[in-house]
Each structure stands twice: as C-alpha cells, then as structure tokens.
Image 1: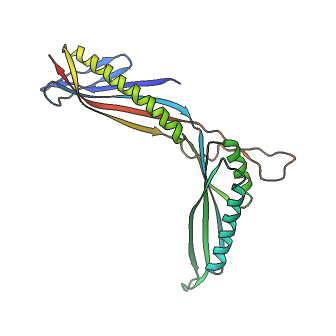
Image 2: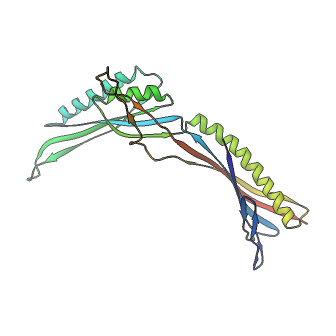
Image 3: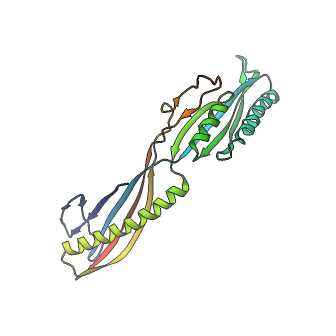
Length: 239
C-alpha cells in the first residue's frame, strides 16, 4: 500500500517570516527559542477494514414490567444460544431499558422495553450468516466496519518508525536551509490517528437463495480506513 508523507514546519526569526516550498511538502515557521525550529511530519496509510461490528435488538410491549422482562430476556437468551454456533464471532449483551406508557390521565397502562446484543468479528462470512439467523427475531440497529486491534497496532508500529525517519529527514533539510552545521532534538512526540468510514447500512446487499426460505445472509463490503501517525517536535540548530 502506498504511504503518503506530508511535512509541515514553521520557521521565522524576529519579525521576518520565510515560507519554504518543497516538492510534495510545505514548510512554514515561527520562532520557539534560540535557534529552535518547531515542525511536524505525518505519514498515513489506507488499509482494508478487517473487522465488522453490529448491534441487534428486540423491542416489545407488555401490560406489566414482569411480562415485558420475560419477553425481552427470552429473546436475548435465544439469540445468545444461536450465537454459540458461531465461535469466531464475539457476542455480548448490550443495553436494556424499559419505560412505562401512560394514558391521558398519567396512569400507567403498560410498559415498553428494548434489549440488544453486540457482535464483533473478523470472520465476515460467519457474522453475515449469524445476522441472517438472528434477523428472524431481532432487528438490526447498526453495522459498521473498522480495523482490528492487532492489525491496527502492527500498522501503527510501522508508521511510527516511518514518521520518526521523516522527522529526522525534515530536520536535516531545515538544517541545510538555514546554513547550520547540525542540530539536536529538543523534544518530539508521536501521535496516532484513525479515520474510519461511517456506519454502513445500504451497502449490505441482500441475496436470497431460491432454495432457502429463511432470512438471506448479507454480502459485506467492508471499505477502507486511514491510519496515520504524526511526529511533531522542536530541534535546535548549531552554527
């Protein structure tokens, strides 16, 4: 995958400012101390999402809170039993809430409640089939894709090294631009960031099998996310 590198720096002495233009990057300066320059470099990489997350819920009404709880608990317990058929999918109970319904005289006439479960997995096929099975009794609340922790951590380690090298290279470039003999690093910070796509609903392509009368499974399009690391800090020039 292609790594894109952006370099930004601010350089100035006294009231004079100098704007440097370099191929594929820009630099801009401001004084931070005696012969000190503060600037930032950034590297980023777009990667394919390898993890799917979904929430599904059951909503019901009843004349009393006990009957409502029974309905919701039964639905969620059955869903958890079905989910055990798919060990590659992590399933956990989500939020549950109940609230009373009133008539025009503010008298309680019934109860409404909702309970949900959360799904997480890197196995898209199993998750798709599980969602199809659960949709016979539960409703889809949201579905989104992202980068798993293992994949994200590995990529961030790689980008941290690249951002550090980019910071050092920019420091050398600025040292030459200011006719200095060398530099020393005063401080430097590495920061990570991620740009994930919005939750996806319409991209789920429902495809029914002619011989299967059950709820059809879904074909996922996971999309990509952008992982970035910035290195910002200060160097001091020596002359």
